[in-house]
Length: 386
Image (tube, rainbow, N blue to C red):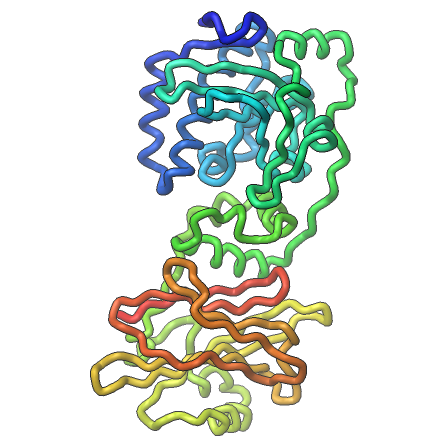
C-alpha cells in the first residue's frame, strides 16, 4: 500500500507490521551496531519494495541470489534486485535530509556487483514507512559523483537524480538498450594462500569495519570469490602461549627439530643462532610470503620464557628460511593489541636476514596478534596467554 509522500512525484510505501517484526528479529544475528542498522533498513526495503515492484511493474523481478544479502549487510549497505536484464540497487538511509545519494564502492567498482539503476530510499526510524526519493544510473554516479576515500563511497548530489521513479519504467519501455553502466576496471585474482591469510586477518574480532581494512582492489577481489561468504563465518584461530610453553602439540607451531626434520644440520645451526636461556621454549611456523620475485618461505619464531612471577616473557623473530637469503625489503613484523592498536612494528631493511620485536611480558588472559605483512599480503596469528 502506498501513501502520500513528501512530494507528489516521490514513491511512499507503508511497511506492514509483519515486515517490521521480521526485520527486528533479524538483528539478533548481528554483532555490531553498523551491521544491525544495515540489516534492519535493508530487510525492510527488500520486503516492502520488491512486492510492490512485482505487483505494479515487473512480476518477474527477484532478489539477486548470487550472494546472501544477510551476509552482505554485515559489511555493506545495499540490496540488489534483478528486473529482466537490469539490476536495481536499493540504498536505504534513515536520515530525513536527502541531499545526496551515498553508494558504497562495492556496488560501483566490483564488476559482478554493479547495478544499472541506484535508488535512494529513506526509511523512517521506527520502520513504519519508506520513501523512494530518487534514482540515478551507474554511469551518472561513477562520472558525476564525488568519491569519498575515507568512507569508500560515491556520493551524487540529489539535484542530479530523477525524483519520479515512474520515469524509470517509461525509459525502460522506450529505450531498453540505454547505456547505464560506466566502464569498470577489472580486479586482480588473488592466490589461494593470500586469500586464506587475508581472511584470517579480517575475522579478528578487533577489526570493527573489515571493508576499510584492506586496499579496495584487494577487498573487492576477495568479494568476487564465490567462497567469501564461507570465510565470513570462520572462527578465528587463537593460539595459547601457555599450551605452547607446556609442550602441547599443534599442527602449525612446532619445535625447530620437527619443522626441519629433513634438514638436521640446518635445524642445529638455526638453534645455535638463538641466544636464549635453557629454560626457554622455541616454537616456529612457516609462512609462504608472495613477493615480486616469487614466493619466499619465512620462519616466524616464538621464544617463551617463564618469569619468577609466573608470567611469560615473549620474544618474536622473523627469519628467512634459507640462510643464504635475506628477508624481503619492507616486510613488516608487528605486535597488535586486542583493540587493534599497533604496539610494536619493525620493518626489514636491505640485506636483513632476520628482524625481532622487543621482548615483552604477557599477563594472564592477555590477547594480542602477531602480523607479518608485505604490500597487500598480510598474515595474522591471534594469541592469548592462558
